[in-house]
Length: 362
Ligand code: PMV
Image (cartoon, rainbow, N blue to C red):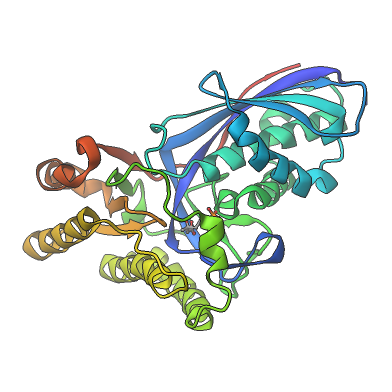
């Protein structure tokens, strides 16, 4: 193909797991299935510009974050390119300029790997599509690019090879990754949209992210996943996650918020329990994480609210609640929880519907 240069821009959101992925096999295959809410406001926008080069011997690319060159990101992307080259044979034919920015503050403790890797994977898929289709693409075809199941599935497959949970960020509002008997079409290789009708109570569900600790992650997720090898409770945990995915699939259809709260909070604490009981062991919560959890429990007991929390592999707290409770819960967060956040910072987000093609130029 004779395309010399061009660029694509995609935005892709972060996601928050309800049933957690923790532990993987070779080639980024998860030990257990997981399910996440796709977020709406927390996202990465990535532009990928490509220019044909004269040789095809090695990868050639530059990375920019908010307009600043970031050579520190290169090794992660080099690893990613090495893993996906076999599926994207044009990678060594072009020089790439990767320009990326996040809507959430740097080092907020919100991982940008899911949104960043999914956005990059989508840009690369757009290049592939362009090379296969030739340079002339009508608006109609362009639109179908986003809706084409092959396109999304392969982009999710590639995103997984960048960062496991990234394969759950392309679509919304709920995505399952990992083979599970109750989820038709589910796969260890890519994320799929939750295939069942979700109860109205989950429509526009809210997630306020409390920034308890904005520092660098104490334990990278790569190290964390590896700690599940030989972990004394690993097999039980993988079994439990399989069971929990079946249970939450029912809950999401039936809309039982008490059961939802119990399952989601237990999943979060179990993730942290795995890290506390590995060798070496880690405590990723901070004292303020526990203060917040106790405040949420007290608020629920006093008011009957259906607010609950979940956690990633860090100290920040995701506060989840139905849209109709938004005013009351945000007031509670401002009055009682913001004081436990670094500089009082939190981010209001809600369930979103996945990645978007922002721009193409050829
Ligand atoms: O995608 P990774 O390798 O960064 O792992 C993410 C793992 C958790 O965020 C802790 C859980 C999950 O399922 O997203």
